[in-house]
Each structure stands twice: as structure tokens, then as C-alpha cells.
Image (tube, rainbow over all chains, first blue to last red):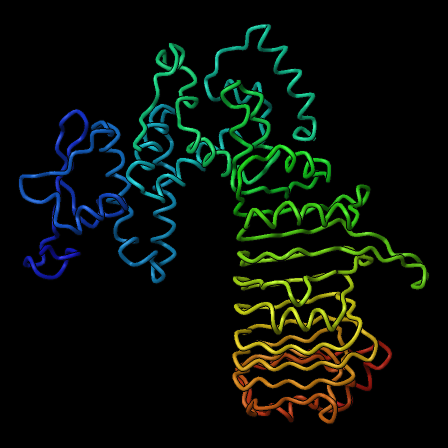
Length: 174
Length: 328
């Protein structure tokens, strides 16, 4: 039987688990951090991921996984406090600073991250990336959104279709 | 189940427009974070892939200062998900008033989609000079059996038509706020007392109640009453009630049975012979009173004479300032 959490037992040493990315890189992390993922938490509670086994993650490449784990390690202490009702304002401000910095990355990385967060069911991370992408779209005209998101410039045919569509959606442009 | 980025077209693979490779579910999550139905709807123009993504977002939110009733109609007509989580409409533009029939249609749209939260705030309207010129419009309120939070801030000439007694109940309703409309006191009393088994907080403000109010609730913890009514009689039996606010009601009579009451805010005239607290001890954690007659101790301070925190508002007319000075 595996202890559900690190901390007690095991001479105070935190329980570690191994995660294996789609390109076969092994990541050893504290179980508490990996457990931010609802999917991994179930496996870990069942005693998986320890020893030489490792938990394979065929849908997450090593670059994305290392980024995901960076988030989990940072957020694990607050999550262990059940949303940290007793966290200080300084702790919260530090997490917020980290989050802002964390999503200040290439769009392609953002999309890989949100897919990984979705697959691994890391709600905080999915919500953080969704908000970042939403902020990139908010208040912009369709052409500005296209440019921001890296759409190619519309063909004349597409442009005509867009114009017709915008007329139909006049209410959204007030 | 697990979907990775689809290599849908060479465009995606070429490093452009990667966002369109996300699943519909993730795009919906992102668009939902815009907290604006209009912002979300604007993405429908991006490409065919995006045309209908926004119509499945779980939150329909219209909080923009310039949001119009037409936008609400159009978004509801286009929305295609079977359920919504939140409907939040807050319109402020007085030049675009909303009729009760239109507001009722919005509520009818929301109800079967089992929202967790419903907020409906309508633009205010200038009342006619003479009260007898007011023509009331009926607003039919459907049942929201799964809704936890229902907040309606309406128009003074709307009269609420609440679900009838035989209808089932607002099973999950925790918070109910009703502002600026008219309602039958008997209907309101019945709904709160028999059709809201989970209610924790009730806030009635600028509510024109016709008839007496009698609330009986085992679950209610917070009650704020700003009810206008002729010769209003008020009866509250709420064994879990902890916080009570009475402002602008001036009830002719009040009988409040609330043994757990610890905070009272009483802005109206209080007469110990007419306004009776049953079962509440003499001690309160907090008491806030507005005193209308400056030369006497507020009588509520005699009813509750041990108070951890007292907030006393004296209403003083400028002409009597010198008298107050002398009295103090």
C-alpha cells in the first residue's frame, strides 16, 4: 500500500514519481507536484509511478512536460493547503507574478501547454493558459485577431465572406 | 480521448495559425474566458473552422456598458449548446429599454438550459410624475430547479409572476436577490417559505410588495429587506438566520423569530411594541442603527444591550445642529 501523500513516513523524504514523456525522457518529481494532475493523482494514489516503473505520457513531449512540471512544482505547496486559505498575501503575489511570467511565451508553446493541461486535467494551468489566450483576443477587431493569432491574410474571397459575416453579426460589433 | 494537435493543414504545420489546431472543447474554454458573448461571437468571422465554436460557450455574458438588448436576442438565437452555466445580462443604456415580455423570453431561454447562475439587470426607467399613471407589465418567472444564484434587478413597473404553488421547487437556490419591481407579498412569501428548500441568502430591495410578507425558512442565514409597501406587516421565522438588514421598509409591524441572530442593521423606525424579536438574546455581535429622532437613545439599543460592535447613524437636520450640540 502506498502512502497517499509524502511528508510523514519515509524518513521525511518526499515521495518521488517518474514521468516519461512521448520522446522517452524521464522526469523525476515529487508526488505532491505531479498530483496537481487529476489523472496522475489517481495513478499515484494506486501506488504507480514509483521505483523503476515510471508513468508513460504518450501525448506530452519533453519540452512541454518540463514546462508543465515547472508549473506544478511552483503550485504544489499552495495546492497542498487546499487552495491555501492561510497563504500570505506575499505568497499569493509571488504565485501571481510567477503565473504572469510563466505564460509570457510563444503561442505554439501556449497551445501545447493547454492541450497537456487538458489531457492531464490540471485545472489551474488550463485556466491560466485559456485566460492568456483570451486576453490576446479581447477587444480586438477580426483582422487584429487574425494577425495576433497568426492567421494568413485572407484571400479576396475570404475577405468578402468575412465582410458579409460581419454584417450579419452587427450586434457583436456595437 | 486524448487529442493532440491535429495536423489539419499545411498552414498549421507551417507554424502559422496554430490555435485552429486545438480541439473545439479547448477553443470553447478559451472563448469562455473572454467573459463576453459579443467578444466570443466576433471570432466566428475568423474562418469556417471558427464559425460556430462560440455558440457552445457555457457562459453567456453581456456586461459591456454598450451591450444592447438586440445583442442578447441575437446571441440567444445563435447559441447552440444544450446547457449553460451562467447567464449574466447587465444593461444600463436607458435609451434602449427592455420590456417585461422580452426579459421573460430571456429567462425562458435560460431556464431549461439549467444554469448555475442567472443575473438579469435591466436599464432603469424614469417613472411618470403621478403614481397612478404607472402601467404594470407582468414578468413571468420560470422555475430554475438547478440554479444556485438568481439575481434580478428589474424595472419599477414590472410585476413578478412567480411559479405557482403546484410547480416544483427552486431545489438548489442558495442566493436570491430581487430588486426594483412589484410582487405579490403572498406569492413571494409562499415561494421563499415552501419552494426554496436550500435558500441561504435573500435580498429584496426597492421591492414594491402588495400584501404582507411572511417568511419561514429553516436554511436562511442572511436576509436583507428593502421592501416598500403600504402598512407592511412582516413575519420572519428563520432558525438559522444570523444577519438581518431592514432598510427603507418601515414595517407597520414586524415579528422576527431568529434565535441565532448575531448581526442586525436596522435603518427604519423601531418601536419595541410593534417590532418584536422573538428568541434572540440581548447580545449581538454587531448592531447598526439609524436614529431618526436625535433626542432619545435608539430603542433598539435597549432591546440589544450587549453589542460587540455598534454602528450608530444619527440623522440630523441642519437647523437643529445647535440643539444637538447642546444635547450631546
